[in-house]
Amino acid sequence: MTADTTGTVLRGTPTLGALTSGQLRRLGAVAGLSESDVETYAQVLTGSLGPVAERPLNLPPPTRTFLSDDHTPVEFSLSFRPDAAPALRLLLEPGCGADSLARNGSVGVETIRAMARRWNFTTGPLDDLQDLFLPPAPHGPLALWCALELRPGGVPKVKVYLNPAANGAERSAATVREALHRLGHHRAFATLPQGSGYPFLALDLGDWEEPRVKVYVRHDNLTAGQAGRLSRMDPGPGPAGIEGFFRTAAGLGPDATGLGRRPGLSCHSFTDTATARPSGFTLHIPVRDYARHDGEALERAARLLRHHGMDASALVRALAAVTDRRPEDGVGLIAYLALAHQQGRPPRVTAYLSSEAYAVRPPVAEAVRRPVAVR
Image: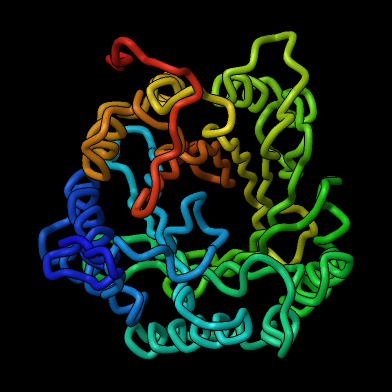
């Protein structure tokens, strides 16, 4: 359905919920989830979006959400491990239809508490930090995002993402320090690497073996050498492996200076309050700003997956599950590539996939004559 010349919505126009839940259903098949689980999670997605799920796609996005470049309030990701199907994750902004950032956060908290009642988990860590991250007049580009790791059985693992700049960007560091202190990680802040800001703090809620608090650090003009020194795990990944991931994901040669456009992100996960050191480290590269088109981004991702003994064909199928356009016809479908290390576990490579409900960013090259083959 389309709109007529007066802007009236005509019957048959696809909705945000229909598009994104369809993408989720197809991605669930790639991740090996059962039809029953996929249907459950599709309903969770549309229910979490609330009335916005019924919004026709011929209307503009409900808000200019920071979650994606085209302001779709939904993003998918696939986390790859050796000899296993990828884990499917869903990131969404429950309050994306609210008329203010404060109301956005309130709707987000209400959604998380409804999930807690449904799946029987505590919101205690979020409750302890609510005054820090959800003040009456918040600042910044977001209030609360919700991430779900979609597991077999229909009960996801739940994460919330909060904005350290909610009380002003100049207070972000103090907010992160206070949050870590309240959660029992009294010495953790001092171990974080220097950066250009703190875009997110994330909390694991629900059925996690070792619930984490994760601090994200922004790094403007990040170079490969700097990236190799960002981990604070002990023991942790060697600099050479991190630098190699950085160069491949960003497509930078040995003489390149670094990420001069969109910055890189490091994430530091804390689980043990008895030690100051993080137990996990992830490097996020915004590949969409360093590739001419998604064919290039896919080629780099496939190279990284094969290097780590992972199934690159699953990512090819995932892109086809999200869109029927050629990767060469746009850039941004693969938004980020990340390499994650967690103590006691093999490394994981994660590809973050944009829904592109509202727009496809055109490729940098004026014309792409042939598709990129990923073997």
